[in-house]
Image 1 (spheres, rainbow, N blue to C red):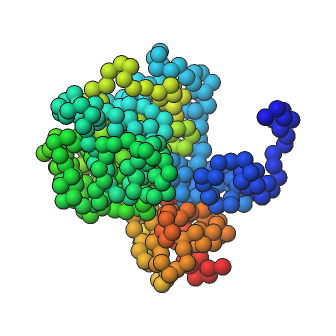
Image 2 (tube, rainbow, N blue to C red; image 1 turned 90 degrees about the horizontal axis):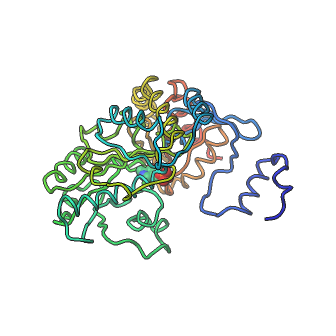
Image 3 (cartoon, rainbow, N blue to C red; image 1 turned 30 degrees about the vertical axis):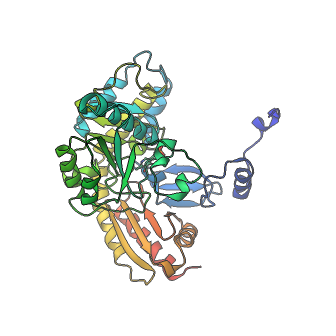
Length: 413
Ligand SMILES: *Cc1c(COP(=O)(O)O)cnc(C)c1O
């Protein structure tokens, strides 16, 4: 702790040096691929030895706009030189503009800016409970929130408490009460779980971390109808599916559904900075009064300026339409690969997954093979590889990805 010389030392030299230092000093809560990246541009990233890779993950869809997008970078550096943080004790000249733009684009009445995705989820859960007590008239401390099996909504205590993933929740209890889990995609189970004390249903339109699981057609629409009929808030977590990833600005548009609360994060900053938001109709966010919720960094001028630029390039450069077109093309090419290892190719837009048969030797091996071929992908669970490149992907790059997949399966060395 007292060795100041470490602050003036040159960069480490080999990838192994970085990996060893991480292993020695870091919390061991991740098992990344052994690639140490130092630069990114568009769909490409480069490691410390100068090798180029196509990014097939986009930081879990936080980099939809491509790495280091020049217009977001310009907005960030300009704002960073002017004003970065005021806290919400004072006002700043970026927040109102951010509100106007995101509300107009998403058809929302009000927005609550936060930082991480998990914070947006927590904020929505708090607001839903408050709405339940103050508007719906649920007796004090009796509010119930329905969530889905195999959900992923972040890593806070309340959120992992209603996870069904043993790794995410094991050893972290006791957990907050008031959550009920129903099978994802099962509208009848959802209806059966609703009680007079139910205040909200929380779901991902497509489950990302679970392995790009698309619910049966009509599920979201039915969920919307059930929520309306039983006076329950529908919260859709679009932190991964939102902002163009599935070929629409929001994935809920695929079923013509409007949630009461829609959560966005990740690509809201194009990967530059943690920015998230709860988007709402007037009735629900309207229950919050001064002092009842907050965040030191939430809504800061740097975050707002970055988010405004991230939204602008997404729309102006037609990344959403590109995700649809190139996503369809890539999905078709992947589905065209004839190989015994492939169980299913699925997805929407550029949110794709290849699921392998259990006998195929695991997804991690394929990801390591793809890494050697210059394509970075990450397995989710044992047998599924997610493919979610930046939305600026070209047709040629999409074809190249499918070729690498085919080659990796045929030559699994
Ligand atoms: C990533 C993610 C979150 C959590 O976001 P963080 O910024 O990591 O807290 C929540 N929900 C979904 C669907 C996500 O993909």
